[in-house]
Length: 97
Ligand SMILES: [Zn+2]
Image (tube, rainbow, N blue to C red; front, side):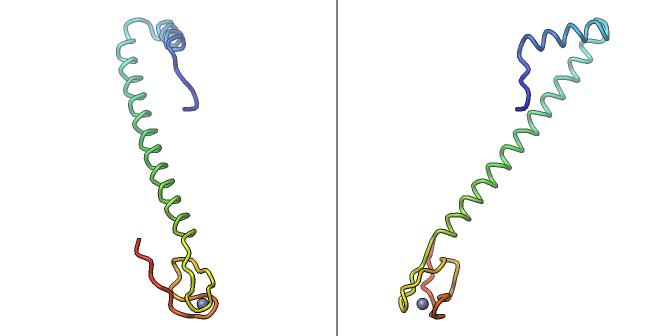
């Protein structure tokens, strides 16, 4: 999180709100702030989840790129995604993950 709101900051905000809006409007404002914080937390949680999914996907793609198949005919290493040897064109065995 870019900023952390601790108890001292909360008190400061409440005091400022009390001065600016007066005691009558505080419950209303408090409810609105609470709702805002809840929505912000939910949004950041969604973002974190989405980021982790992307990270896992990227790690999987990197792993797939690292897997190599050695050509039986010329012994040249090929990416497992290749169907044919890049050196001699021989069909490569398919890796079943
Ligand atoms: Zn080959």
